[in-house]
Image (cartoon, rainbow, N blue to C red; front, side, top):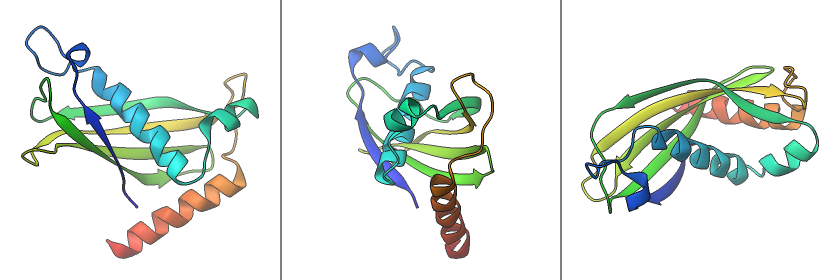
Length: 140
């Protein structure tokens, strides 16, 4: 299951050359990840109130083509790995106008408690994510 969001590039997103500043893609990944979870009925803010958080423990970004001021980007998010206390998502950023591949990336998230100690992903979330991953694997 791929989840998609759109992002418009504003002046604040760019560097002096009018190109999206490289670190901003991590913010875009965060937005896409939050929307991905919410599309599954998983409210990150509610989990945080219950003492469950997902923290980034690894990230990778491959910069393929530049995005510029005014571009509309589509960010596709999908899960590719689920463990008992971690999960990994991959992202693909595409410029909507010409369908050019801009960036690919991934994040690995650990499930932690308020003391930032690893904990198991809540069963209902784990089984939901596992089912999505298995369905994806069968369709590939």
